[in-house]
Image 1 (spheres, rainbow, N blue to C red):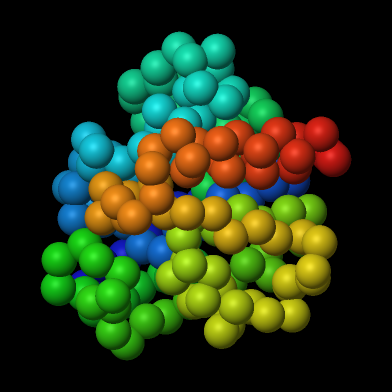
Image 2: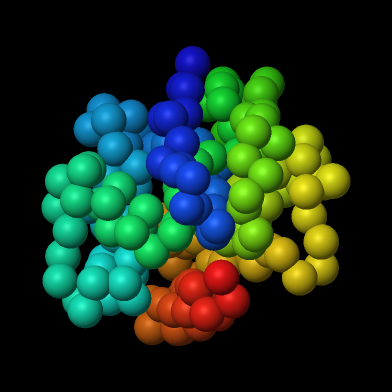
Amino acid sequence: MPQCFEPWIDESTRVLIIGTMPSEDSLAAGMYYAHPQNKFWPYMARILNNNTPVVTANERRQLLLRHGIGLWDSLAFCERNGSLDANIKNAEPNDFNRFPQIKHYLFNGQKAFQFFKKHNSALLTAQNHTILPSTSPANASIKNEVKFARWQTAVQKCLNSI
């Protein structure tokens, strides 16, 4: 049964990027968004690090935390065949009430938002969250540059507001 990673959150975290559940590649690597075709880390490098790649888990964690951004998943546990969110069954949510300092939630895809909303709707307001296109390689319906532009706009807007 897949289990999420520990949250990458510290006392200065004000923006939280939320996925659904780590993929099989991420679980095997022990790192968020480890699938080589996932666009999450290339996007973060472009947005936060002058397009300089970040490679190790610690570099990636520090890049986000340095900008007041955290990373976690909507689900603590689930049953899932493969890595697709559509295959998730018997999901157990994470407890986001542990982090009252979060001012804005960025959702990496619709499923991450749907699971969060189902279990944590009291934390959502019209202004404090943005649903972004999934960075997963399975989400090929939106062109990469369009996806990137949406991510860049959302991240910069959050950073400008904290």
